[in-house]
Length: 513
Image (cartoon, rainbow, N blue to C red; front, side, top):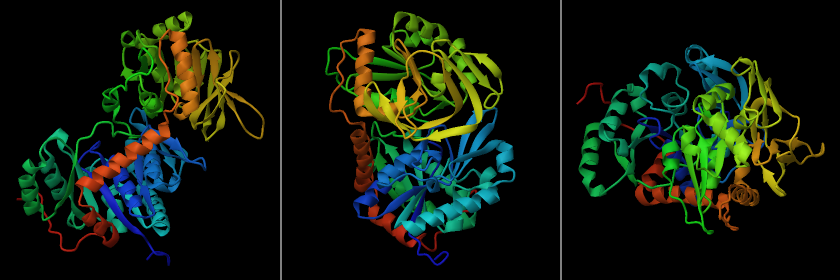
C-alpha cells in the first residue's frame, strides 16, 4: 500500500545492452496482458531518444512509450515517461520533465546532482500509475549493469529496488555472447539488486531452440534463475523504437505494387534525426520502397526525397551541403520533382534561419527552396493540431522551437480551430514542407499525396485505397503479443507481476564461478 491506495502489480524489463529488444518485449507483454482482461500501463522513468510524441494534454514523451500505450489500449500520458533526454550534440541534452523542457545539461551536469529530485518524481509517477492499473510494465534503459551510473540510476535497478519490482533481463542472442551477458549482468549487481533479478528472456533467436536448452539449463545452475522464454527472430517488429532501428527499416521487404511501377522514396539520414518513424506509414504502402541515404548520389533516382526532422537544424543544414544534397534538392525543385521537408527538414528548405536557441549560430542562410524564414524561440511548441491537406482531414503533432514566417507559396496544411483557419507549412511546385509530424499516418491524405508524387515524378504507381496504417500497427502489436504468448512462460511471468520477486534468489559474487 502507498498513501492508502492499493497498488497494482509490476515488472521491470531490463536488457543486457541497448537495443536488446526491451521496447518491443514490453509492448508484447502489455498486449498479452490486455488479452487476459487486465488493465495495464507502460512506464519508463528516463528515456534518451530523439523520437518523441505529444500526448493529448500537450506533453512530450518518448515514442516508444506512446507505442506501448497503444499496446495497452490506453492514451499516452506524461506519467508514463516523466524524464526524456533529447541529445543535441556536444555531450549535452535537452531535459524534458513531465512533458515540458526545463533546460539543457551536459552528461556530467545531469548525473552530477539532479537525480535525487528526479527519482522522487519518477517514483511518484510510477506509484500513481500502479494505483490506477492492475499492472505496470516498466522498461529499463541500456543495461542495469552500468555500474558507473548506478548511484544516480532512475530507470533500472534504482526504480526496481525503490518499488520492489521483479526484473527480467532481455538478451539479444543474435549479437552473440548472450549467456555471458546474462551472467555478467547479474554478477555485476549488488546483493540487494540481484535479489530482484528473477530471470532471463532470450530474444531474436534463429534456429532450433532445442540446441539452446543445455545452455539455459547451465545458466540456471550457475545463477539459480530460469529463462522465461526464447523469442524467435521475426522481421518487421521494430515499431516506434528509440534511436535504433534504421537498419531494420531499410531491410523491410517492399509489398508488391498495385500499379505498374514501384515508388522510390529516399530519406536524408541527417545528423540528430528525430522522428524517423514519420516515414513508416510510407513503408506500409504496397509498392513504396523507402530507404535512408547519406549521399546525394544515392538519392538521384528517388521519386520523392524526404528531409526529416532533426534536433540540430543548423547542423543538418551544413551536413546537407557537405553531402551534396543542397545541389540535389535544388535540381529537383527546378525539374518539378517531389521534395518533402518535415519539421527541421522543412526549416532548412527556407531562405533563412535565425537560431540563438538550439545551435546559437545566429543568422544562417537556408537552401532557399521555399519562401520561409525561421526564427528559433526559447519556448518550445508542443501541440496536437487537426486540419486539412490536399482536401483531406489530417491530424499530427508539433515539436519545435523554430517559428516559421511564410512569405509566399501556398499553405501545405490548414489548421482547423476556433480561431479560424491558419496555414502551416508551404508548398512551391513539388517542394512541400510542414512542421507536423505524423501527417503521413493519415490514410486518405497519404494516398492523395502519393498520387501527387507519382504524377509529378512520372511514375505509373497506384495508391491502394484500403491501406489503413492504424490497422498495420495494431497487427504488429498483436504479433508481439503472439510471440510472448507462444514462446514465453506466461504463467511464470504473470506470477512475477502479481506477487513480486521470488524469495531466496542466490547472490553471485563478482568473479564467480
